Image (cartoon, rainbow, N blue to C red; front, top):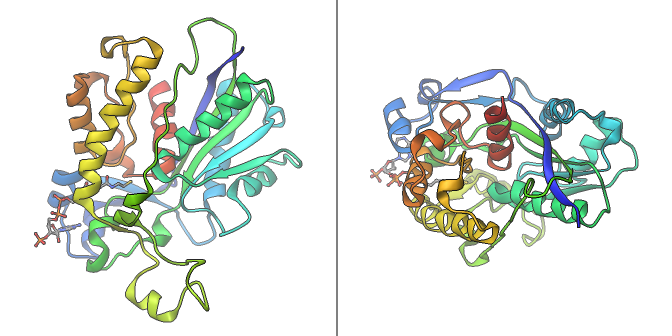
Length: 305
Ligand SMILES: CC(C)(COP(=O)(O)OP(=O)(O)OC[C@H]1O[C@@H](n2cnc3c(N)ncnc32)[C@H](O)[C@@H]1OP(=O)(O)O)[C@@H](O)C(=O)NCCC(=O)NCCS
C-alpha cells in the first residue's frame, strides 16, 4: 500500500501586527503578564472586515502547491480545518474550492479546533493510502479576531489568539521509510465546557442566539485556563510517545519537534517531559499567538523555509 507524505507546505499571515501593548490599550493587561504566562509578544489580525478563514487560506494553498511542484488544478480534494469558518454553513472548504477555481472537487470541513490539522491529516492519509485521491489540499485557517471579547471580562482568552492560515499538499510517497508514519487521535467530550463558545447554539430555542446571550458575552470563547494547561501538558507527551512507539522510533531519532502553538510554557514543559532539547523544538507563538488549526501547518512551513 502507498504511504502518504507532505509534498509541500505554505502559510499566510495578515499584515496587521497587534502587540501586547496594543491589547493593553483595550483591556486591563500588560506585556509582562502575557509574555510571562504565554510567551506571546504579538499576533496578526485581519486588516478589515470581509476577510474570512477561506480568504486567508488562498495564498497559503497557492504557496503549498508551488512548494509541492503542482498546479492548483491538480488538487483532487480539499480538507479545511477551522473553528472560525466563514459561515455556519456552507463549509469554508467549499468556499476555498471556488476561490481556487476548482469546481466539482470534494471539500470537507473538519471542526476539531487545535487538533483539526491532525484529524485532517488522518483523513488525507487514508485517502492517499487507499488510492482514492492523489493530491489532497489540507488547510488550517482561522480568523479569531472578530470573535474575541476585548473587554476586561475576556482578557484571559483574548490575549492568546491570532489570525492566520497554513496549508499542506498531501500525496503519495514511494520511498520506503519516508512519509507519515503514525497518527493517533483521541477525544473526550466530558471536558467540553472547559473551553467552548456556547452561542450560537442549535439547542437554544426559539433562536440560536438571543440579545441577552450577546449581552452576557456567551458568543465568545470561555476557558478554564488551568484545566486546559494541565490537560495539554499531560496528554501531549502521552500521545507523542504513542506515535513514536507505533513508528518504532525513540525521542533521540527526532530531528524537529513541532508542537501545536497554544502557549510557549506548555510547549517547553512538554518538550522537557519528552527530553527533547530546546534547539529541536519549533516555536513561533511569540509572533502569531495561537492560530488554532493553523499553528501546525504555519510552523511546518516556517520550519521548512
Ligand atoms: C490562560 C493562562 C495563560 C492563564 O495563566 P494562569 O497562570 O492560569 O493565570 P490565572 O488564570 O490563574 O490568572 C491569574 C490572574 O491573572 C488575571 N488575568 C487573567 N487574564 C489576564 C490578562 N490578560 N492580563 C492580566 N491579568 C490577567 C486573572 O484574573 C487572575 O487574577 P486574580 O489572581 O486576581 O484572580 C494559562 O492558564 C494557560 O495558558 N492555559 C492554557 C491555555 C491554552 O492553551 N488554551 C488552549 C487554547 S487551544
